[in-house]
Image 1 (tube, rainbow, N blue to C red):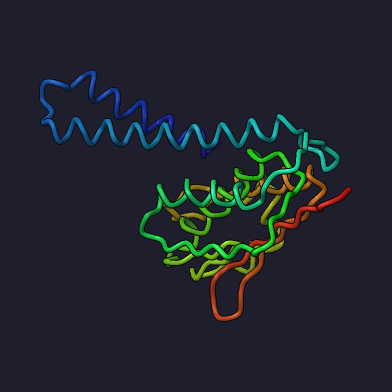
Image 2: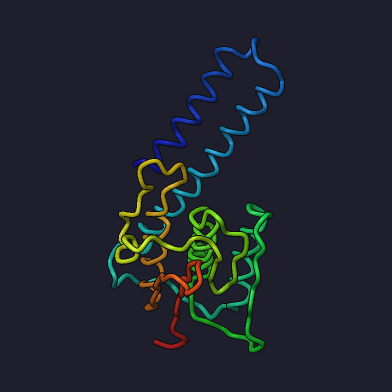
Length: 204
């Protein structure tokens, strides 16, 4: 509810000021309000897409998705390209095997998993300046108390944390990967940073 109400409140607040005080605003103030409303709307779209992904494939571990052989390289590069546009300040290093892999998957859902993980590395790593796919960052890592329930949808922002919640995104990741008969795990790396691993089966 926090993830949905917060952007809606921001959008309503910005548009109320534009409607009620437009004559008193400078062009710069007007642009800042519009930009804030746009950013909140983009975030809300992201949240709704995550929720629709869950309802589409079902919340159960036995949910099925329609899988077709897809080029893993193209799916990864699609997610990385979207991430780079949103976070140009972070160096993304992609290590892909020389072999061409066709992996049975729903490419849009798996791309969303990768996008969620990349965005979490940027937002919740705090000090992250570099991300390696697959998928490591050099940020501050994951608090030990959170490691045991990363994917159950309870990971809201801690008190005083101004960043977005990562609960819905990781819950979506687990649901999508489980529906592909795959596995996902999160862990801290020695020396700092976090590593998320997604395993997808090549065969049933």
